[in-house]
Length: 77
Image (cartoon, rainbow, N blue to C red):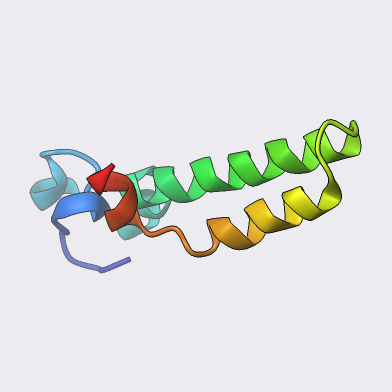
């Protein structure tokens, strides 16, 4: 994360120009939100594989696919 106030998906709120704290944005920005949502999706599919609802191969495929997702792609959807 940048040390100066960001724009776009790195921002937390309109107050960023005055109160920007990179350490907070690392967890609360739109970029971070998407990252954590992907981690939750991967964990969910892994849990489903442990319950034999899907195969471990599918869980691995989701894990690998999540690594390829970009913030820009999510925003465009």
